[in-house]
Structure formats: C-alpha cells, structure tokens
Image 1 (tube, rainbow, N blue to C red):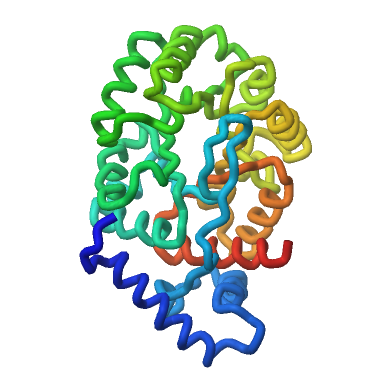
Image 2 (image 1 turned 90 degrees about the vertical axis):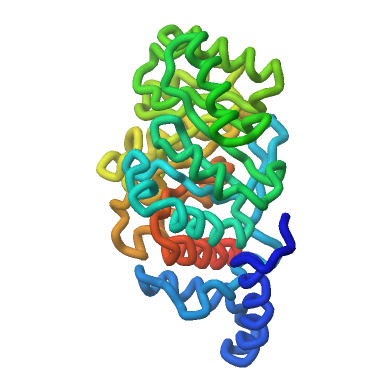
Length: 314
C-alpha cells in the first residue's frame, strides 16, 4: 500500500487524535466504538463530526472462514448492486471510491459486484493502492452457456485488473431447475476453478426452491442468500422459519454462506429495524458474512457501530 499522504493516511492520523480526544469525552470503561454504536442505534442519520476518526474494531472488522474453502474474509462486505447498481454510477467514481475507502479503512475486505451492476471498473479503481490478496472479490455471471461464461471470466479479469477472482457465482437463480438449465455455465465455473482463475464457485439465489436445490450440488463452495427477520416484504426468499433451516443444512455441509438483503434493499427505513436485522443474522451462527449495499458514508458508520456493539455483547 502506498505511503503517500492520501485520505487513508489522514484517517490513520485522525484515528490517533480521535482516540486521545475519546479518552476525555467518553465515560470511563466505555469505548468510542461502543459510544458510536449507541448513537447509531438511536439515530438513522448517524454521522458524528469525528466519524472518520472512530475505529469501531481495534483490530479491524472480525474475519470468518467461508465453509470448507479455507478462504477468509471480513464479516461485512460492500455491495455494489443496490437497485441494480444505479446509485453507484449515478454518484460518480470519486464518490464511489470514497464510500469504499471508508469501509476499507475499518477493515472491510469483501466486495460484492456483478456484470449486471456495471461497477467492475469502479471497483478496480477503488482497489488501487491496496493489497489485492487482502480482499475477497466476488462477482457474478448471468450467462447460461459454457462458452459465454469462459468469455465472461476473461472480461472480468480485465475489467477488475486482477489475475484471479475469489468467487464467481451464477447470478440470480430463480427455480430448482438451475443445475440443468445452467449445466454448461456450471461446468465452465468448475473448469475455471481447476485452472486457478477462480477460487470458489457458487450461486446467488432468488427463490426458496432454487436455494433448497443447492443442497443437492456437492461442488458448491459458497451460496449468496437473501436473509433478514422480516420476510418476503423485505425481499427474502420466504419467511425466516423456512429459509433458516436450509442455511443451517448448507452450512453443516461446509458451504460458505453469504447473506444479502440484510436491510431489505433499503426497506429497513428505521435504525431499530436495521439493528434488529443485524442481531438476527449474526445470531444465527450459520451466516459467515454479509454484503450490504451502502450508498452513503453515514450508513457505513452506522452499521459498523451497530456491529461493534453487537460483538462486544457476545
């Protein structure tokens, strides 16, 4: 990583100053991260003046291992597909990079992207100056055939300026016929994993039937599943009592579980709802990591503050 005095360097300096100020401002025995979490839970627009100086987790965001893959990453990821990716290219590259670096500075090392989001090049530029091997970089292909998926992988490597992809998923499976309908695409992913250009392969699911079918696919490394405590009105595959047992069964098989739609793609409009969902998902013990599509920097701070408080109470 560059040693030039960039925004990241400023944040590191600010963190030191913030810690010193925090020792005067925060009650004894209460960390600045815990104080921030309390503020986050109370206010949906949490954005303290010294937010950049807060280090929510002193050693960085906690890490997890994705099933039996052996791949490690942070328990929180940055999504880039909120409402199809539109907010990100609307905000422009500079704002996107600032948003991503806000999370990177805190130790977030999981990035979720996809061909359909049109954010690959933005992600590439956000990663410049950071160690590629520190990140879990996941993307997705909508292509149905072996030939097209192989061409996709070539393009993704170029667009993301990397020699390998940590994970590639078949994007948006909606029925239990996906293993047959995407047989060629799945074979291509298996071949790319064998070649070493992809480390872990899987699917993203958008129906309970598609998700349950994953239990029959032994080669599955990871799966991206919609999960929150609020059910279909908040864009999950079904009610939690139907989704959670499938998550557990896959987790028990050694499949890495990646959660999405934690905040229902913006439907959790109240801080209390967002807190409830974070507590629910982290409390399951079977969701390894989660991706959230933040579109504003204060949202990143709020979520990290809430997670810090939840983990401090575990």
